[in-house]
Image 1: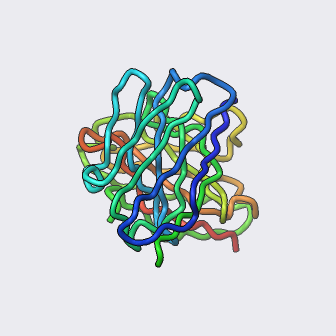
Image 2 (image 1 turned 120 degrees about the vertical axis):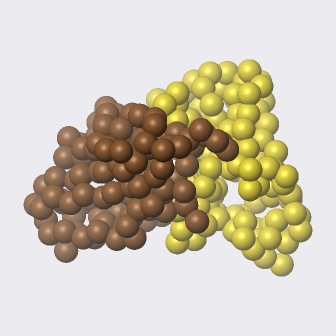
Length: 117
Length: 111
């Protein structure tokens, strides 16, 4: 069973860049789609972006201008960068594997990122 | 604002059955049979409990069942147990954006 683990700073200052990495174990990252999903406190889930090793990726239109997703197959990791963050970007960020039926069948434990000075 | 609409809360007594609705449009639930449901306990990551409208992953209790009709999907929990108290989120494939849209989540309370 594949396992995912997020890592990165828990506190980011406004206007700076949020950077997170997801390490995948138990299987190669060269298969499947790999995603970032976030959940603001007390709110629902929001898909940020996903990527495939073949270069196919997709961004949430509401975040596209500020977000970059990338994948490093040699390290079995994928990453997320969100530029020019504001308090509205405060959320628990999850990495997840997206299946072919648009389901997310494996999730990391999540990491809380707070945007505050 | 979420693209799929779920009730904010649903409650039931132990042993009862409850149903959570998830309403979308013809751009998502109404056209595609790619509806998923997730269970999320406080402070934990979501867990996939239903995919492809009504299929359960291995290891998920058969007390969870789901279906869809028109633009609305439904999750039913039978024989409600204390451990079922959690948030439940629906999602669907959609023809635009990131091709996946979520509901706002429903808090299930076991009385």
